[in-house]
Length: 128
Image (cartoon, rainbow, N blue to C red; front, side):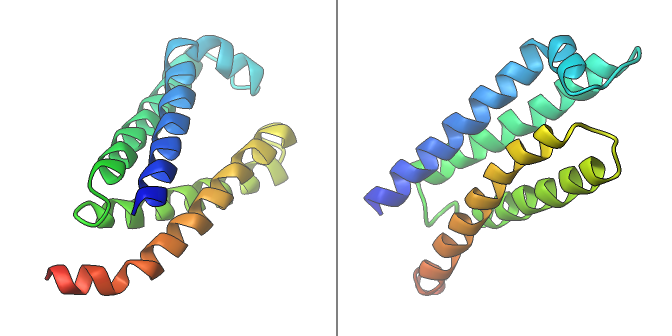
């Protein structure tokens, strides 16, 4: 479990840093990705807040991986959905292509989350 704890610490820090940047610098982040209008900062800041909240969930998994295993399923779903959602909007020309390339990092996290879920399936059943 030691390696999984380290991995989920990295995942937590990743989300907390990205979320904080988006939340604190919402107006600048919105302009950088081409989101304009009176609510642009709110939308980007709110996204950053949600990303940071997922970071807290990953920190809980790092602390107690098996007890908080269900959070990993939600996180994998969120990361996979982020990739699909971002890719669709990039393909439609709503956001710059480089934003979807950055989101591909979430695809890597989603795959590793799936490996964790597969490897800990029996451990979860033993806890029930």
